[in-house]
Length: 217
Image (tube, rainbow, N blue to C red; front, side):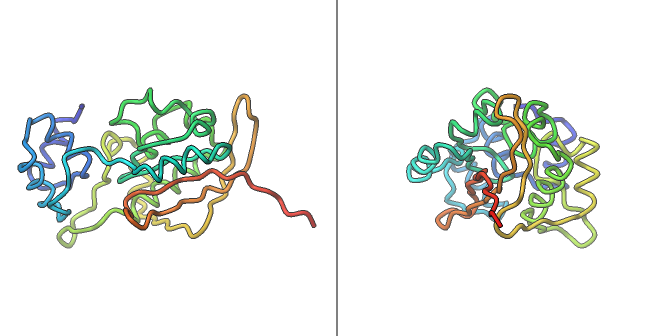
C-alpha cells in the first residue's frame, strides 16, 4: 500500500477524514488487531461492529452478475471501489483483476487508466458525472469553513480531478444515464448506465451498462 507522508500526516492531525477502506488497509500495515480496527472505524461514526475483512458482495449479487450475460455489470462499493464484475464488463473495459486493489476504483480508472478511459467517447462528461456523484455521497462532518477533502487516494493532487472536485458540483442521477462508448472490436455504442442500489447494503451498487434500443416511430 502506498500512502504519501503528507496524506498520512493530514489524517493523523485530523485534517482529513479517511475512507473506511483506507482505514482497513492502514490497520493491516500497522498490524492492528480486530478490536483496534473496530475502535478506529467507530471514530469515523461508522458501525463499531464492522468486520476487519474488505467489503464484498453476497452470493445473490454474484449470481445476478453471472446471469447478466450480455450486459456489462460492475458492483461498486464505497468511494467507487470496484468489488466484482462479470465477463461482459471485462470484455468491454479491462481485466479488473489485473489492476492493483488500491487503484481499482471507478474514479481512479476514469482519471488515470488510459485503456479504461479510451472506452468513453465523451470522457470529459463521464469524469464530471463520476466526481459529481462522489461528492454527493461524501458526508460533511467538518467544522464550518473547513473544506471537504475528496475520499480517494492518489487523486487529490491530480490537477484535473482537483479542478472538477473544487467546482462543488453534485450529481444525483435519477434512472439511467446515457453513455456513449467505443471499443476497438465491438465498435461504437450508446448504453443506459443504470445504478441499482441494494436495499440490504446501501453502500453497494450494481452498475449495468444496458444496450439502448431506439423506439421506432
